[in-house]
Length: 137
Ligand code: AMP
Ligand code: ZN
Image (cartoon, rainbow, N blue to C red; front, top):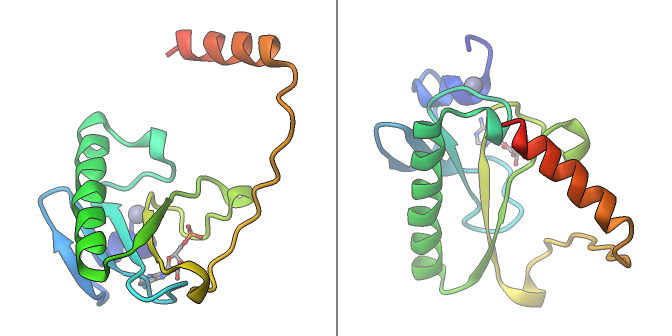
């Protein structure tokens, strides 16, 4: 994709602070980190959302997310969140698949998110709808 900023980063047309690279993926520091050591892991293949990736790129991406996660834990000796936004309403701002790996240092970090849990309702209908969607492939 000519105009996609992460495709440009993958092609090295614009600079980034690369921490890991292999044939199919790249990991680099987020330019506006929510905590120190915030890394983005991307596939070199362009896709907007995670399920739109090819099978090969999807496997390679998860493999790199695992590798970088292990490095973040080792390097910073901390917990971390893995975050992947899909679509505008989910907070996606760059429409090229990416996983955020965000180091967490307890109350000292400023990263917060709401988790408004509710009682599970309509479970039979939801299960039926999701199963039908899954059976369609
Ligand atoms: P999202 O809201 O999940 O789409 O997150 C996009 C992330 O990409 C944000 O955290 C940005 O700070 C980050 N970002 C945007 N442009 C760049 C860039 N050129 N280099 C590194 N990170 C970037
Ligand atoms: Zn792209």
